[in-house]
Image (tube, rainbow, N blue to C red; front, side, top):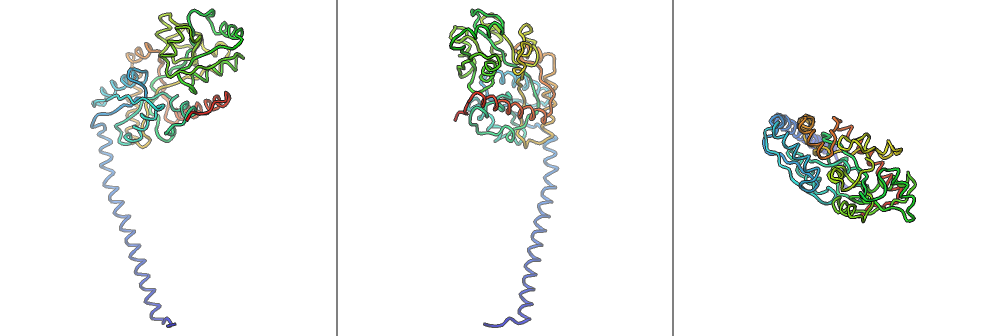
Length: 350
């Protein structure tokens, strides 16, 4: 084997040093180029954000056209157009428990031109009841609570009870228990009825429907005695006397149903949680845009004309909660809904 001389060792060392130096220089130059590029991009991004919006904005709703979320989105669109001086287009993307609309936000929301109007229950209840393709805490950010609402326990108008205590007495006399309807299996209308059964020690048997309209038809027809429904869908039938309201799931009496007591008043404070609709953004929408749109939404939904329109459909004014407060509320609602579903032995649907 040929021995390595001191001179050859020095030449190897020198070559290695030159290679290391060149590599370090390339890294330094690369970082410098990136820094310059970033510094050039920041003013452009800031200018784009400052000029926002420069083109039409999309508001996605996950319910059908003419539904509650659609109505709220169109109210919001009016205020946004007045304040932001750009067209606002409301698009209905129903189906898959809200996943279609949420996917649209995930795909297009970063730029600050696509937002979502959806009820909190779609994010705190649906993921507990069925497998969904989104993460409510990672894929979207709540900007502004637009309205609050509750559930109402309604009954066929011809049944021999007028109040919740009378219904409970009636239910205890039924050997096989009492059927109750909800607008969807695994959601709050379902678990509220089951929780009442546990608390009042009555046998409540759930009958799940796909939406409120078919359930309300069966309720009026006498095929189902009682139902837990959203106030907005039951309100016209209550006002017309076609069904009767027994109690509301809400912290206080509703302005639109002042004569209907809360479950808390009747001894069931566990049934008091309100639901809410909010405006949501992509988590990576620029913070300046998020704040600007939040301010516009909250200001518009405080207008007297808007509050009157909300009252006609059974909605209460939203609260000026922060993103952190709404997220905390959503997490607590998710925890409670999961516990309720577990207590009744419910297994998520595929």
